[in-house]
Every structure is written in C-alpha cells, then in structure tokens.
Image (cartoon, rainbow, N blue to C red; front, side, top):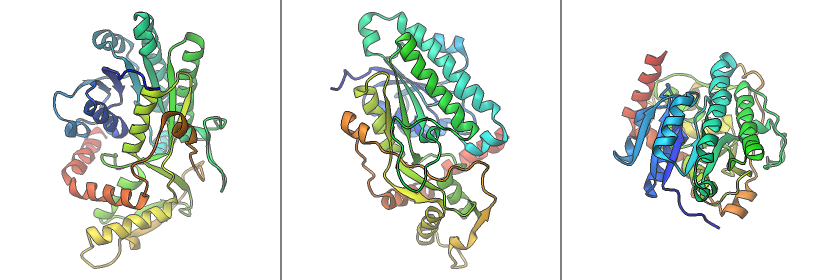
Amino acid sequence: MSRSLPNTIFVTGGAGFIGSCFTGLCAGKGARVIVLDKLTYAGHKANLEWIGKGKYELVEGDIADSKLLHALLKKHTPDAVLNFAAESHVDNSISGPAPFIETNITGTFRLLEESLKYWKAQPKAQQDAFRFIQVSTDEVYGSLGPKGAFTETTPLQPNSPYSVSKAAGDHLAHAWHHTYGLPTLITRCSNNYGPRQFPEKLIPHMIQCALSGQKLPVYGDGGNVRDWIHVEDHCAGLWLALTKGKPGEVYNFGGHAETDNLSLVKQLCALLDKRRPRLDGKSYAEHISFVTDRPGHDRRYAIDDAKAEKELGFSRTYTDFAEGLAATVDWYLANEAWRQTVLNRKRSAA
C-alpha cells in the first residue's frame, strides 16, 4: 500500500546522472527537493538545468561533512533521504581507490549517522513516515556465469574497489536499520543509460569517441555482458521503493536487456552511421579496437527484479532496448552544448 507522498526529499549526489533524473521526477510530482552534491567532474549544475529554477535547491558540499549534513537536515526537515552520492567509475577505482573509500564508505557512514540523529529527534508520526534509501548497484553481487540472474538474496561477492566500497555502504545501511531502527532500504540496479550520463561510461564514451574521430576501445574480446535499464525506468522504481517499499528490504531493478559490449558498440555505430554519417562514407565500426582487458573484469551481470514487480508494481516504460538506445543517441547528438560543457569541466578539474 502506498504511503503518503513525501513533501521534502533530500537527494545526495543529485547533480549526477541518475540523481538529477530522480530530482526531476520528484520535482515533477510536486515535492520540494534539496540536492547536496560535491560537484566533482561527474556532477555538475548543467544536469539540473532542464528541471527549471525554483523546483529544487542545490547545495555544494560533501556527504562526509557531518556538520553540513546536520545543518541541512535540521533546516529542511526532509521526509526522506536518498543517497546517490558515489564515486562510480570502475576504472578510476582501480587506478585510485582512495576517493571510493572516502565517499562510498565514510561518506555513507556520516550520512547514516546524521540521518539517525535527525530521525530520533522527530515526532513519532514523522519517524514512521521517514525513509533512507541507499542507491546501490548489481556489481556488488559479483560475476555471473552464462545463465542465471541476481536476486535480492544473492550473496555479495564484489570484485573491484568500486563494488567493494558500494557493498560496504550497503552493509552499513542494513546495520543502521537492524541495530538502530533507522528505516533504510537498499536498491540495486543494472547498468543505466539515457540522457546526461558522463562520457566516461560506455555508451556516451563511445558516442564521444566516434564523433571525435577516435578509436572505439573495447575491453578484451568484447564478450562481457551487461543488462541495461533506462535511467527513467530506474528512477521510477526508486520512487516506488520510496513510497511503497518496506524498511529493511532490498529491491532490484533491471532492464531485461542483456547484451555484450561488442554488440552494443556495433549498435551504436549503426545508429550513428544513419544519424551522423562520416564524411568519408565509411562506418564508425571500422574504428572499433580491442584493448587490454580491465583487471578483474566481471563477465556477466543480470537482474531478476520479480520482487520489485510483485511488491512495488514496478514496470518498465523502455521495454525495447533498441528504441531506448536510439532515443539516447538522438539526445546526445542534439545536445552538443551539454557534451562540451561536461567535457570542459573534466579537463579543468584535471
């Protein structure tokens, strides 16, 4: 049964790819949204501009800053906290794991601690209505063989510094519920795609490389398989978890769209061939190159989200991955200014 809709929602990492989409969804439902974001290279104001002024409040800051968290929670008295704030690029976690430990573990701990203090100070009715959602990833489950899918009861077997740090954050959220009673929920999703994803991730990275005349680097043999969910479907699932989910539970959200990386890159090339043909008339696929595989590269992920479908009423709007991918390519082609803004931000941050 649905609960009363939250009036004020505190969204950490809300200027990132998924967080900004969720911020827009909440604002569209009439909620007051307070966004806290460190505004690193992957989180930036341009991701929120489509929502419109006055529909959210953006605060620049770190979730590991306990004093800031305390002040914001006290000032805005949110009905819910959703933690999107995370270092999330696996390659970066391999070359430099420290920020992943600091944000994904220490930051999550600080946020849980301040949320617990805030929650305890609220009247009983507000305590009952409050929710803390830890937004996580299917990567915490490890790597699958050629068959099967992750369920909410699959043991966690993370293999990269990134997934280990996310699993640690999940364990913290779980413990703060079972030890202290904080009404936390954990959500885990498959690979997201859609507008405003930073171009270090596979789909926008390949689009950027193609349009820049660069090689399209594919790890290993390109046979690593991922399940893809459109970011808007994921955020719709998060809204259901927020309004219908049971504290202490885990909910998976998947796209039911498994494909290997090489096939995906070839799909992108075919779409770009039609929408932005090369001047020499050749296919972008000629620029596909195979590079040394990522250390510890998980072979396959797949999500079983039957629990979310049954208990939350979750469903997908983007049921055809080919159509969703085409719409995503069209968005990046139509938003050259956005692409340049985020790329310039990364260069300046470096």
